[in-house]
Image (cartoon, rainbow, N blue to C red):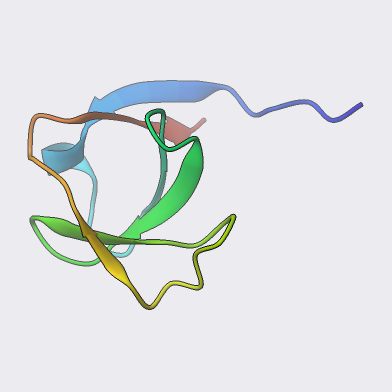
Length: 63
């Protein structure tokens, strides 16, 4: 059984560009590319297709 890292809740707007974060809605990890875009890097994502996020969206970062 694997242990999931502890996630700190943070707003998307506070995530640094290039930082990996967890999106609880899709249950996947993304890497922030700009103030409004991030690319999925787990699941079906290969880090090339951007997805839009709002600055107030709540996401998680590994602690």
